[in-house]
Image (cartoon, rainbow, N blue to C red):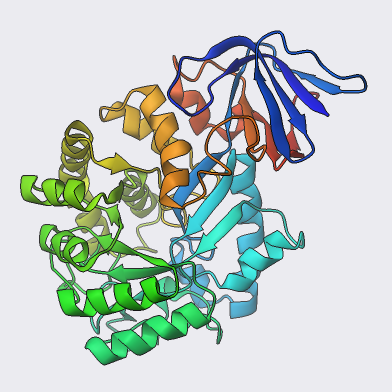
Length: 414
């Protein structure tokens, strides 16, 4: 038995915190949550010293095999590129993120390595590859005429090429990605900030409704669902009309699109931190990132924030996603701070990162809240996060991380 005592417990349900509470863990599951809980003999006790105890965070949009340093990537062997995911996964876990959805570029074997205990990392759902049209967001055909995988990623047989045009190519590509072990099918239904073509702007719609619907059909047939990189208004609408359940970025939402999201019961994964980090990286490394990409990132900031606020006010379901790989690995908590700066209460931001994210990933029966019987994914932050959500943005403040009852980070005695 393991008990965390003297804690301010924020259980992820939205209920008021339990002050001076106790969380009791029996092996991998929570056995009790509350005040004045009798502790069995031989229980190992951790004193939270009044810190905030929360469910392990869930980041629904990461890329473990990506970073922004294009020049370095050009000189990195694919096998090394894959192994570089290992410290990124550990940094993410140390930041208090115990579950992720990898949104493209990472093979299912990485997820399996975590499950088998070969490497340390969050539990994972993976999209494996990004489906994109020729010349669209995800087609990394560079002006020099070199054709590289999305964002100079890895080249392995279990990461299928996602470039497809027309219903039948989409069908075959979707089936190949599902065969490769994908939990989600991800499609680019609009242009994007990091696209290498000046013609591929965030507002341009990509893939037809029929093409997107074909991928949705094939995914559904295998019990899977679809997520969409969708920044422009029409691309978002097309994705929703075709049955996509998770809109990534959602930069240009209008009233009609927001109503459609509500009707379809779809989630928004805003990734507010991503364009800010693109701009910062470009300013610090002007020789490594195209000025065109930095200009596109700057152009979307205000619309991105306004869309997030409008979606929040309308009651759209929102799940946290940091887009780490574009943003910095291990600083996932910065997304919560930005969500609060743009209209969420701290409790809403925590719920977006716990219970709501768990529902999007269909893990809510096991994760997302601190309740009896659920898996003991637990973090301890040495601050009152409801008064200072920015504390969770600094991984150093996350002093304790448990994944399924096992301590994977402990800085309480150091």
